[in-house]
Image (cartoon, rainbow, N blue to C red; front, side, top):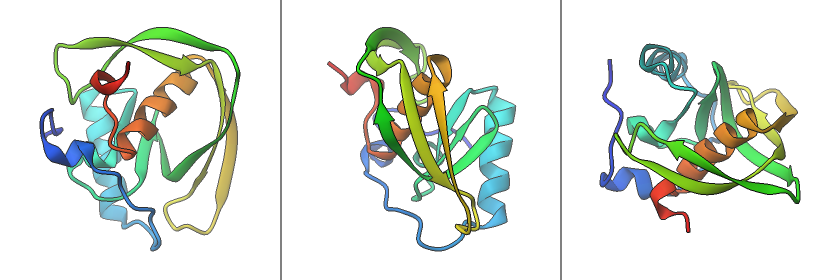
Length: 138
């Protein structure tokens, strides 16, 4: 199994470019396998050294995810991260979000609203794609 990159690996602070070509099945399989084997709720491509805007949230792979809308209500949550082993940090997260993403072949766009835990996980993973770690939050 691939090792998840840990802080201070500079790859974790890169803003990843949008995927403009379909994502190979090898990358899809690798990300899903690592997420499953690591028992993580979410995973971002840059945590594996993959330079694409791809995340996994609860066994769902999303390419080029974008948060379209957020609730006004935010709450402080304690989060951990595989890239910061042994650490937890309080971060502010929107309670409700609407996310849009593409399928790995880029032929289909999906949109879904998420509340609380799913919303927090998606925000955390999308932050990774933007080079933001929970230890960066104020």
